[in-house]
Length: 156
Length: 375
Image 1 (spheres, one colour):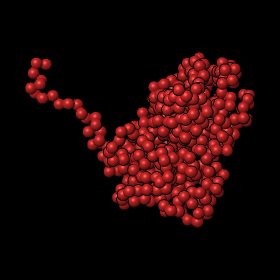
Image 2 (cartoon, one colour):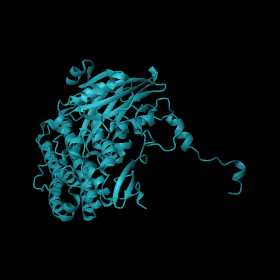
Image 3 (cartoon, helix red, strand yellow):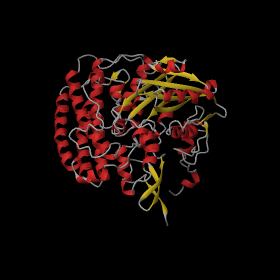
Image 4 (cartoon, helix red, strand yellow):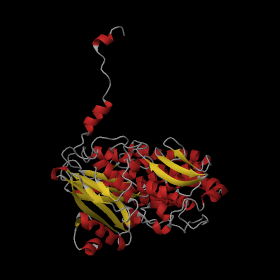
């Protein structure tokens, strides 16, 4: 696969190139891929591997020239995760980073628009983290029909 | 007062759904635009992490309301990649028929709404009425009009009922006749020429870098279509040419491309293409099984790994990133909707300098669909 040759490491997974990288190296890998035909930034995903206490950021790129999809993966610690922003390479990364910041609590240095995106007035834990209990949240917020006590019932 | 703020949406006929644009305006000219979403966030991605592989099928289709089938297809493809399944041939052809009919329905809706944004209200009435005839086909095939829950991992839910090909053919020839009428009323209408040409231009050299996909990219002159680049289902057997600027068939090329006019004409031409593809698929469809034998739904485990699938929707490229750790539930499903780039970064950039009266036609010409931004 072209991407694996270019970067010199990684593996093939279900027809896609999968490259493991680290925080410092990632932006140079993505820059190199962009310069060599991988010019369509597909998306930026975040996976919560709670058992390993890690977040995984996956940068997806596609090359119209080589007809190839590549995933660049970075592992971040789950406590105070931070990563440098890459919105200068592809402008739409800004929005993906905004969403991941809101939903997972990952900080992106250099992104000046980490403002609330989909949530409004949210002060709880970032909700896409695996330890956020969405059932309990739904019960607390929506299961709030007040109970009517016996005495108040009289006369109805 | 030189500059003032305008809030368009979320309940406004000039935006393409439940989303809001915050505009800063100087006179009639937009100086800054900001997209505000959050009105449609349903948390499907989170919900899918707590449900089994099969239980997620009825959820994914709800990610795009006007064209739900592409989501079922992309999800099914990703799961099939993980499971290493070969889909029966007949199912692949039925999938093409369903996807192309859904594409026609979605294009009818988007062209109609676009015409509405120019004040030509006849067209939305007609296109939405005609779209219902396609929904009738879906009702016969799947039992549902909007969310079909029909394309399953491993194939399609039911085989095609007897007599359905005749109904499809009847509907297609009806739509072909109606398209001629649309052309006279809208596509050769001076209002459309005068108002749409040169409006909402995406710079051609930035289009790919900005993540523009689908008909919007083809209107910029790039002949990229996932159905050709990475043929899925039975698209490899279909005979079709990718529609792109400046090859606009019978329609006039009156601008340099990349604008609202070209984007809508490309969509109009792709309806013809989809009609031809449905006919080809009906003709070439082989006999045989329509679905693989499934493992037990409750105990079904997908091997650990990362899968990515992409499909071409009427709005652009859909991508599904599915992660499995080998258990009966996915670890993560992330959906790339085409409107995520079109509706936020691209729209915010190209709305700058536009006239207020053109804001809604620019948004409709990009075919922004907020449900796939929020998921």
